[in-house]
Length: 136
Picture 1 (cartoon, rainbow, N blue to C red):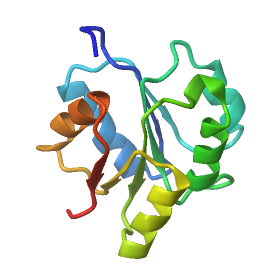
Picture 2: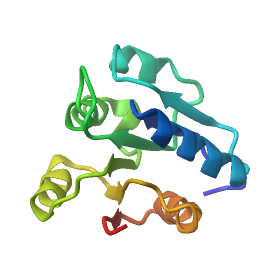
Picture 3: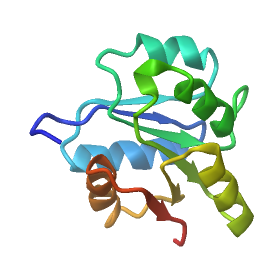
């Protein structure tokens, strides 16, 4: 990763989670953060983003498209086939972790976000690590 700021997309329908993400990324000095409040017209909206995200966080339980459905859309697109995509969920069971891995997520982070560890987690992901932080 170069010195340029990473471009981050977060798709999350829960207002408190969006607020926490905004606070953390502001504290990190990140200004290229886009938050979608739902997954309506997801494919059109994500492809309209410029510059393209370097990192995408997807809430799993969304309507009309779930995190799994959005992941499938992104992985089918040449523009996002190599982008790290991380699942964000409050309900993480062992079988769900396996589903997330099998679906092709590059990691999972449990909600609520840990303000102390999230910055280093983002750095690790952008450095190419697959991060599975499922214990809060």
